[in-house]
Length: 444
Ligand code: NDP
Ligand code: 2IT
Image (cartoon, rainbow, N blue to C red; front, side, top):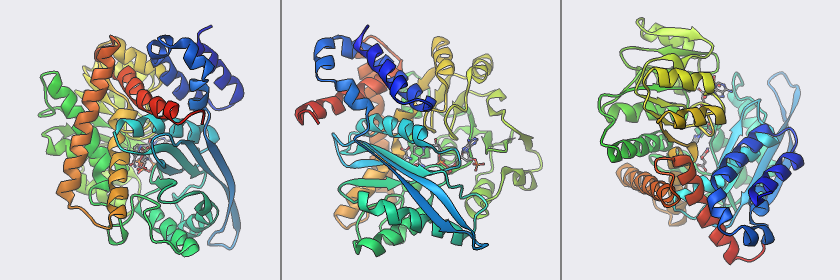
């Protein structure tokens, strides 16, 4: 049996009930076959892949807090410090009822390669909790965040592990967490990113993931003799990534016509009203059902269905496995030419295979959404030098990083004979740097 197959078998056996983690590992290791096969015996003897699929450290803890009725609630907190070969652990905190160890491990595993692709010195980690911020008062969210950090603070730090936002964790949550970290440690340091602008946050971090997604998609199109101009775009999600993907799509001359949340989706043939979306989601923290009161011509549908709309480009920006084989078939039948993942692993493996087999240009999340974490690393740089850069400066650096990233994954794909297979290109390019650093540091 090949070393890749051995490791996949061990991962499935050792980590039962973690299907998302298995999925992420299989996708990465399957693309690495040509790299591993070229050095099969050395890789096996040094257990390179075994080390890469086993997190350096996993922290699981109790998070007790008191709700507005005086009832004590107990959630589970996680931080998986996956790989620090190229820098301090870096990655977001997800607050969503679906969070469990397998979800955090899949996200942390992806983060290793994504962070490597940014070209910046950041290792891979991820954390979060099964706490649901939806429908909670600000006081309840604060109580949860303070309790969460009261345990986590001893494991994180500006030079060890720097968490950030993800689903359910935005500026409000990061603020409460930062305040509690400072109170416990007495340190005013860049321990979290995505901070508010008045206390060490970076301009353009809020926009970075969505903007970065469009910068890399635009670069890929340019390299294939096309542009974003005039394209119809279907977007899923209505959170941080989706909102700023929609904003940048407009700026590049495209028309985004859909968005969605966990209860339903909107089709606005005139183009999504960005101000309305921001007001509903960022200000009111409300549901998309309200969208029709801003735009009577738009359609609101319960459930899922964004991928049934005719378009040129699809940008899944909500959550994992939200685009399945049936959806992929609908996209191809409707003439979609590009799928770029704003979310982490939003496309199932079967759907990815189908899209690639049908000539769709497919940009995987670890490349396409790397602009968020890249800009987090820029926030860390600004915190270290105790300066803040202008929006234009950060945005220009973000764009440069995404353009470079595209060319690196394109080059890696071509080197191994996988032209236009950006899944292979991203996995190989991300892996090569991490393995090189791990080898140089001995058996660690
Ligand atoms: P937000 O919490 O801001 O928004 C998430 C959006 O996705 C909401 O519209 C939410 O709907 C929807 N959603 C979440 N879970 C589900 C679900 N199980 N089923 C259907 N819809 C769902 O998160 P972000 O925009 O920050 O994150 C979106 C994706 O992008 C995630 O995969 C995240 O890991 C990834 N990502 C985020 C980065 C960042 O910088 N924030 C960076 C790179 C990747 P509802 O409000 O109804 O729950
Ligand atoms: O998935 C991701 O890359 C993020 N949620 C952002 C991580 C970060 O550290 O900014």
